[in-house]
Amino acid sequence: MDWVKIGSAVLMAAMLIYLFPRAKQTIENSPKGSASDWMGFIVPMAAIVLFIILLIALV
Image 1 (tube, rainbow, N blue to C red):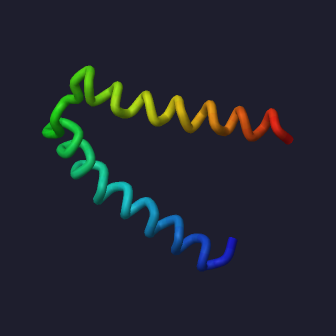
Image 2 (cartoon, helix red, strand yellow):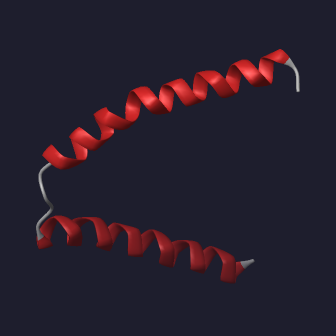
Image 3 (cartoon, rainbow, N blue to C red):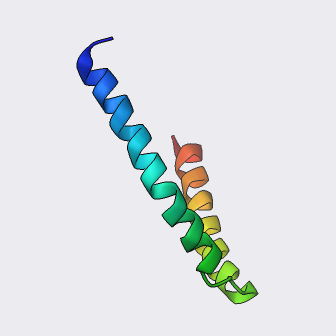
């Protein structure tokens, strides 16, 4: 291993240590989604999946 890989690993570990408490706090204080919020997410995702399946079938 060279010094660049070691330095990158140390910086990534430091970033995770720094960001983990903030991410935990954000998740705990975020608003919860309602059923209509989830449907607003599921319908476009289903349309995208069906479109990709259509593209694969046309190849």
